[in-house]
Each structure stands twice: as C-alpha cells, then as structure tokens.
Image 1: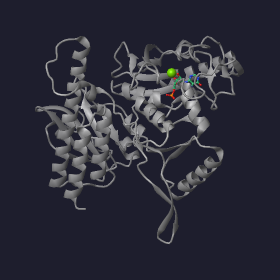
Image 2: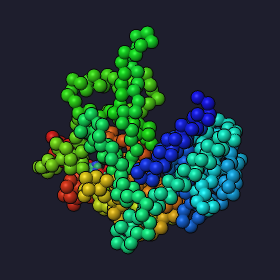
Image 3: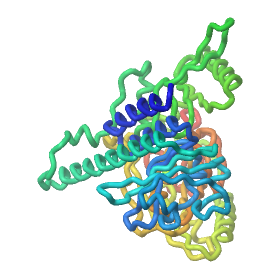
Image 4: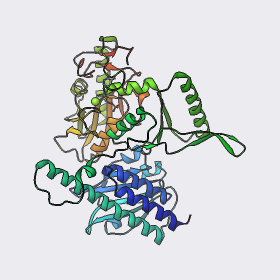
Length: 476
Ligand code: IMP
Ligand code: MG
C-alpha cells in the first residue's frame, strides 16, 4: 500500500478511537499506537501542558519503555521551542543538542529522531504530539498533513472528555446542565466488551484489567507453530494481548492434561518467536488472583489463622533499617516526599521514616479495590494533600503483587510533575507480576503465598500482627 492508503486507513481508525466511549487515556493510547504504526515509528507520545503552563506531562504513550516515560518532567521553555510556535519540528537526538532534555535516556531507547508538533485548542497551545524514530527521518508534506490531522483529532478527543467531565459534574451537583449533547451515561461509563469470550474466566479477567485501566485486546493474533511445506498445520492464539505492556496472556482453567498441551505450545511459541512476551495463568494462579479480591471458588474461604511466620519482627526491623540507610544516603540534600498507600503500608512507612536521617515529608493516598462497590475502574479515594511538583518522590508500598495498583498510581503521580519518582516496596511477589515495574528499593522477595501481618490484611484482619506470616496454605 502506498503512503496515502496507509494514512487514510490509520486516520479512519484514529477517528473511530476519538469518537469511542473509552476513557481518555485509553483512547489516546490507541491513537498514539496507530499513529506510531502508520509512521513506522518506534513510539509516540501525547503530552499536555500542566495548569501552570510550565511542564509537559505524558498523557498517553505507545512504544516507549517505563524508563523513558519516567525520565522526568519536560520543562516547556527548554523543550523544543519551535513546536510551541506552531511548527512541525524534527530534532535529531545527540548529546550536544540542547533541545533534548534527556539525551542519554533517548539514546538508551535507541531514539534517533523526534518529530514534534503542537496541539492547539482554539489557537492556544495545550500540548504536543511526538513521534520517535530509530532512523534518521525527514518528513514530507504528506507526513505533515497526516500528523496535523491526527493532532486535530487528539484535541477533539481531549475536548470531548473535558465536556463529559463537566456534564458528569453538573449531574452530581444537581446544577442545571448548560449543554445537552450526548447521553452522559454512555459518554462517561467505561466500555462494555463483555460478550464474545469463550469462557467466563476471560470475562472476569477482562473486567479486572479494565478496572486497573490496562488496555487489552482479545485474541488479536495467531502464531503459526508447525508447517507441512507451506501449509500451516498448527496455530496458537493467546487469549489476551496487553499493548501497553507488550504482553500476551494465556488464561487456562482447564484440566491438567490439557495444560500440559498448552505448556508445550507456549514453549514452542517462545522458541519460534523469542521476541514475544507471553505469560500463562493456570487455574490455581487464576483462582489465587481472584481470591485476593474476594472472588472465585476460593474467594470466601474461611481461614484458620497463621500457618507459619515468614519474617519475624526482628528480621523486619533489620531490613527496614538498612533500607532507610540507603534511602538517606541516596537522597542526601534533596527534597524527599514519602507517599504511602493506605492501609497496608502503615507499619512499614512508620518504621521506615523513623530511621531516615534526612528531612522528609509524608503523604498518604488511598484507592478503591477491585470488587468493592460497583466501580468500573480504580479510583483515588484519598489524594495527596500537598503538591509534589518539583519534589523528589518515593512511593512506599507494602507489597507489589501483579503490579497493577502501582502502575496506576505511578501514572497518577507522574502527572503531578515530580522532580523524580522512585519506588520502595517492603515485599515483592515477583512471580505473580503482570505489569513489570522497576522497584528501586525492595525489602524481601517472597514466594506466591498469601501473607498477612505488619499492616497487611486478609478481609480486614491480621494487620496488627508484629510479624509477617503465611495464611492457610491449602487455600492460597
Ligand atoms: P497488585 O496491584 O496486584 O500489585 O496488588 C497490590 C495490593 O494487593 C497490595 O497493596 C495489597 O494491598 C494487596 N496484596 C497483594 N498481595 C497480598 C498478600 O499476600 N497479602 C495481603 N495483601 C496483598
Ligand atoms: Mg496496598
């Protein structure tokens, strides 16, 4: 297909994403992805100007690593100035180029050219669209026309979302609506894509991903596994693909015999396509995952108490002190803010801060949990009290399990333009990770067992234990 055709097809889909009922970030991530593909770029980001108009923060992105996304806030004045003046600008990345604020990060990411163009809303600069390529790129008139059409669609998408928020607010406050364009429920509700699954477990899993705002596609791709001559004799279609994480997930609640067959296929797929990331969630993994939220066959289980002590009070204290020492050294003469997520973190953060020898501020957040109320998506139920803009932030977590909570929270914090953002977690249940987030300070790595104590709970209980213990192993 020629360029005209490629761009036309891409614009068709981008317009559909722009006019979908998806939450803003989801819609923009899909647009970033489609734009990146059409341009044959390695990545794309959509940046917005913060309310004070000093920094650009990433609202949505595709194809960029976490490391790159978390590289720091972009100062709008130091950023590519021509873009703000309304020009499509191509920047070649090199350390001597003072328009690139993070040349090392870009080099690590193998970014050679950054193409940037402004987003204008009624003549006012509100953000940027950026494309990243690994090759040296010159842009043609038709590239420019395509990108400028995309940027207009992005602004419309943002405008639509703002409008919906306004409508939803006036609905809540009971004030009369000024505008009556679209059905509010349809516009603000999350996407319902529950039909078409071949198994109820897939439906539940999709709901869980939706809750944590993780974009997913159902069975988007099949991989050939065996051939006879040119004919494909065996294929494998993983259940889910999570584009932002570049991860395929195969969910299986089948009997052991069939799992062995699936394992064989997954081994084969890994051999033939080493570049793809795929994870198998078998029946017990899946039930454990659901049980954590009080769902599934194990969800309502009664427990008989603690089966064994994993870490004693003394062991925990020793480890916490050594983490606090490292943190105090690493953040010497800096502006540290500890951000803890209630409630699990209470014991850890209170012990940790007492051993940190530099001045710190402490902030708390709370978020809704999957399965509580009839919430469609994770919500912040208690936000930060003070601004973290320009501060060094250390997110303190009790335990990182699938990583979905942390992923959501880091995105939220990053949008507040901290000077830096790192993570300290007391416990790391790495084996269950779905969203792979780098953790800077780890207390202990733990096996796949449900643990309680030292702030951690099961159905609200056991938080007051001074040690960390494993709960009834027959269930978890
Ligand atoms: P994630 O989003 O799956 O990483 O889950 C993180 C949250 O789940 C933690 O902050 C805990 O509140 C909870 N959690 C995960 N594993 C355990 C556990 O073994 N015991 C108690 N709570 C857990
Ligand atoms: Mg927690």
